[in-house]
Image: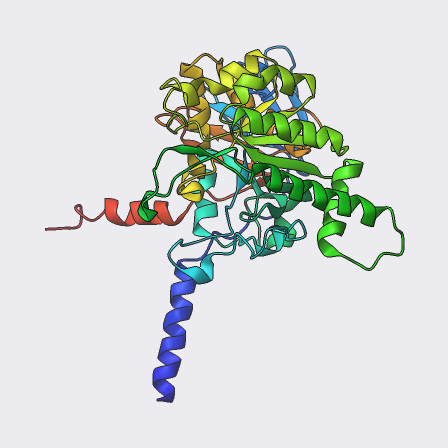
Length: 435
């Protein structure tokens, strides 16, 4: 019996070792220079023959190599001629690392019971060992805003980089924002209960909005009393009123967006972003006037309403960008964690519907960094910023040519291997080895 138990333990350990996350990269120790690549800066600029040098995890030189001649002696030089360099892509509003297998409850930690959970922090539940996390890196997605779900106020998100031993090592910006779901003005009947599946008015809408107002009023009252008994939900929400946290409001319909904007203004919340925003294009002027950004719904989706244009999800970014609204792309929805690696191809689709390549790139780099409040360090290839970038064989917004040869997070050369590449190598040899 003892030998049997030992065998089982060794078997489980062997399985864990062969299927674990790739070992996080070591800290950069040598200055690295990337030469000859077309550098896509992320702020709208491009350098066709670039010289990029980074040291101690920071970019120290980003120049046109035909103009600036520099001595590269003692540096590790990567010849990237005819290749492309991009800043690391950023996926916001994702449950990445919070759920591993949807059908296995023990691996699902993306929500808590109850409606008012601003104090619930997604960061401490983030699993750096997730196989899904490592599958994003070969497509250039190197940072993520890990976000909880459920309830009226879901909780607090944090921004992480995707190559770490644990969440403490992974964190880039801790507790960056609170996420709230605005009540729906309309809902569909539940056909499985024999109800008409068509749209109907939400009769409880005003009541639900009032409940949000009451919660915010209680938070303000709590903040104004210095000797209050500690209340974790109110304590977590205080940051919305001094601007230290951003309020992310999930809302789709035109009236709901207008009401959410007016509610935020009335409550002194100046740092706000609309999430999903299916009808945000209808109130683009209002959003621009109030300096409100949008994390736009998944591009590869169907129109929300029967009278919407068939290609509305594809051209939504163009409609908002043309109005001067700060826009970034998110991927919330069915199989969102698995689909998160498709983020660059969502951006690529917007090019076919009106945006330039440079504008589309900003949707998943600098624009996202601005919305998440990390643009001083990430989001573009500029001197002084983090050396979080990658080299691609071709256009990184095109799934046919987005083939990475190198990727760096804070100057660390990270592994591009994953469970998928392991299987590919295994089965690509299968027929060759058969007699």
